[in-house]
Image 1: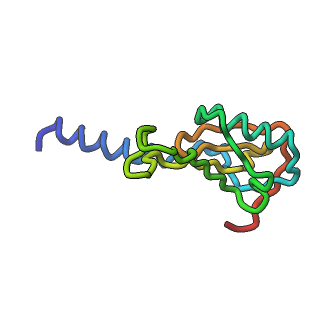
Image 2: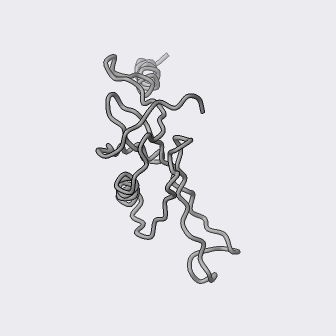
Length: 130
């Protein structure tokens, strides 16, 4: 077997294991729910969601993150077909945000990008099971 092929095969095998590695001191995010859902906390969440997806007309329920750690944001359906929809359907996937505790802080993770947004005004507790 050619030495270049062997070296390339070894390189591929080594690199395929890299994404699964974590730093030993780094803890995994833990799913959470809000303890205090005030107007200020919802405004902070809304601002971070806006920063992640760029949408200014967001409506977020007062009960967001009260019972689940997942928030799904979909764009408003367009009224006419000339506004970017095909056969009355939007082709854009919804955005998923997770409320997590990243020791010791509470924050949002935009699941599509992995971006983390710390929440300074929110208090969270671990989600029992989801």
